[in-house]
Image (cartoon, rainbow, N blue to C red):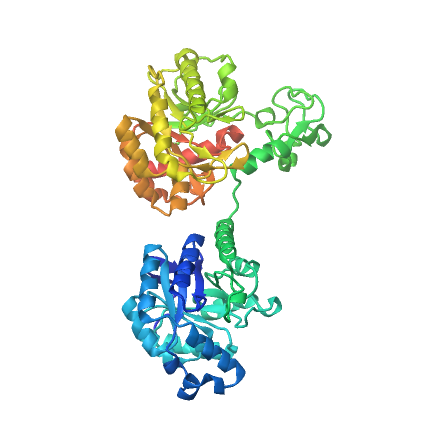
Length: 629
């Protein structure tokens, strides 16, 4: 007996519980015998984003006994209606070939369920990569045996069957060495909600350990969406041009708008499933700062005074010590005078420690602001990267003299406006260029003199953000605008580095869409054309690679020749950025050997890494050092 497979692979597709839901738009016989309607059904399925469109093919004379096939009107009412209708809606072999070719033109997989041997022979010639066995044939070992002989994977619907019959068919498939999956199904048209028993999806998966899907004949889209959320790795739904057409399946079918919504909802459900671990998104953190609480002094506390429970309360914003640390703070001595109603930070309640931190990571840098550079023991990094926000452009800086090298991260927004160097609106683009020139001038005149760096790098986000959806078709125009913007900047004495971007940046506490400067080939072409160099952000890159389903190592390898500066942090999913090293999706053992000879700054850009005297930055540096040694 062949080992049971947990996945089905064909034509570059994978059906399994670790893969995206395979959505089959079931046209069946809803073409009513018309090649024009059949092609319209292909159009609808393709436009919906379904993975495949499936038809049914049968030879009535082979599928039914001669008396019924020749004279269906002499049979009982149900058989008479079914056979008479099937005769009326048949397509010719030539028409099926035409439909299959049309599917190829529309870039959607053509599938077709055979109901007899001659239909199998025909579909083998047409080329079908996987066979769906309908519920009426789940017990038909004669047909199943022939389909197993094709060597193609099988999907078997379980409608009209008892549990013991499912057991016997599964045993037979296993004995035949078939690669197969099962579809939970109720074969009534339409199926009442109270009969659907979606809980059996999980029982099928537990019992047989093969891919389990759902073939639905109920009204609406909610139940099929729920089946996807419950783990069905295949969803099959009948659809039609119009539900009021003549025929047995139309009334239980979805129309175009319903199919579109079903595919949309299943894809959104897939995105929402995420990973079995918790991380805080930047949007959540932005909202948390505004709404959550910090520990706050209830009265003035003198340096050296022991902090009592009544001395501490909790208030917003969440910029200090978490109220969960209440009894870590209570009982400590104040390290300095604390004013009444002051947000408590660790420097006020913890004795400073000079631990001589040295991670052994060359060119290690951290992210700081002008307001906190002198306030903490940062662990002696080699590089300070200052985050300049829009308000900083109007401030005077009181900087000392520093031994560290200097890096600058330019603002991506000023006030409520994105600094969009890729804007196709010339007014918006000119405003962005003006803001960026302010940054350059400020760095040259006010910041650079405090550091030994000859040409401080300035990290720039390209813009290219859209609010509600991607606008990938506009990337060429965006990059043309970006090229003009960069050429208009006076960069004498500084080095401008564009940063690769994630697909879903967090702006103003909400998620938006990035467009350009994500794809490696696109960025490389821009750099070749303009001579620009980049800051490579590993977290941004991994988020894009997760979204685009491409390999991070290959992405980084393409961009290595243009990389002068590294932002290093881990990533989760498509929007979990700034994650601590080794706590996300990046394979550091594979990635970091690319940078063994890298001589530029390596900035540990850990989200909230500055807290607790830069604990997050230091942890990241220690972990990275192991991969760079």
